[in-house]
Each structure stands twice: as C-alpha cells, then as structure tokens.
Length: 268
Image (cartoon, rainbow, N blue to C red):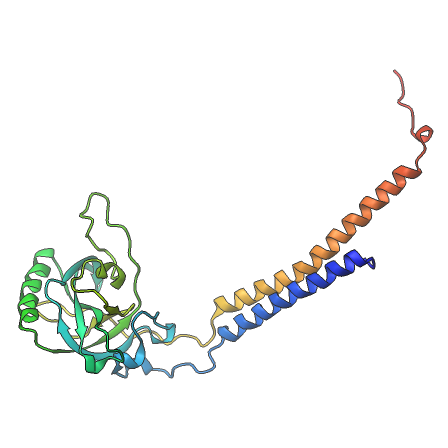
C-alpha cells in the first residue's frame, strides 16, 4: 500500500470520496426547508404571476396554492378530459385555454394557462357546457378566475382503440397540442382548477393540501447513499491493493517451490 502506484490510487479515491461527500451535504441542505410556508399559506389568494412563471415547474410547497388571474377564453380550445373523479364519482372535466390579460403577466409575450372549469357526470353534459362556453369566448369578454394551482399530471397515451386526441390526464403540455393560436405563446406548466363552476358544470372537488413536513426524507436517503458511495471508494482501494498483494504472494510461493518438491500422484 506504500508503493507510489497505490498511494496515487488512494489520492484518487480521496478526490472521489470528497465529491461524494459534497453531494451528500448538498442533498442534506435540500432535505430541510429553512423557510417553510406557514400553515394555511396555500389558502391565501395570491396573484398567479407572483406564485409561478410560464414554463417553470411549480415548487412542492406551492402545489395547491389559491391564485387569481384574469383573461379571455380562446374559442375552440375547450377540451374534455376523461376519467376525472369528483368525490369518488367518475366523470369528465371541461378545460379551456385562458389567454391572460397582459396587465396580469410579467411578460409582453402572449401567455396562457390551462384551466379545469368544472366536472360533468356524462360526456353529453360536458359537450353541452362547451357550447355555452364557446358563446362566451366568442364575445371576447374578460373573466376573473380564482382557483388552485396544481402540477401537470403528465401526458399519457389514450386507451387502446380510443380517438388519438382522447385525454385522461390533466396535462397543459398535452392540451397545448390541441390548442389554436399558439405561435410565440408562453404557457404555464401547472394548471388552474377553478373554484366556481360555470355553464352548468359541477365544481371540482379540490380540498386544501395537507401541511407537509419541513423534512424531505427522500433527500436524506440520497445523502446516505452518497456517504455509502464515499466509503465504497476507500474499500475499492483496499480491495484492489489486497488482491495485488495476494497475487504477488502466490507468484512468490510458486517461484520458491522446486519442481521436485511437488508430490507425485499416487498410483493405483
């Protein structure tokens, strides 16, 4: 182990272990929220632009935050999302593209947010609501909305044999593929679940999120993993050096052994 080769290998392991230790410390720093939101903070209505920005992921403490904004509906962009449960009953959501009022955004580019407007028990009821909403969108009136900001559920493939445009997850990314007038458009990654239903729809059941812990145990687990990796770097150096020593010892014993010293095989 004192040979230059293995001392150099030890120094390399020290560098690798130091990197792993730094990564573990970084994970620990992320595991504990030094400035967690106070209980009930998500129930205080805030301006949408003050909570999130277009194209950005919604931080975990802000999931379910009540926000308000204003804009106008984009015609022909009311889309039905299937397999939505409201108090345990399966049905449909009616969603729309809300083109935000420029005075309520922090960018000069056109900006939209996907909105879940309400729940319907049948697809026919959902389509009837869309007809009413299309008339409102055609008028171009500005609407004020309050609701909960919720993270994108992620797009998934439609059920086998269904229309390729069928949606079963509330995903602004998937809705964007069906919207019109999207050239140069900024879109929020989370969506807005409206508090007040419209056009004969039922209000979406969206209770306040439970107050979470200020400790992220998953990050602590990752920090422990990095500590194990750092220890493994030293074990790897020890194991390689020991294997080399044992190989040299075997070669030394083989060189010392005289050919005549080997026992002759016994005959029958």
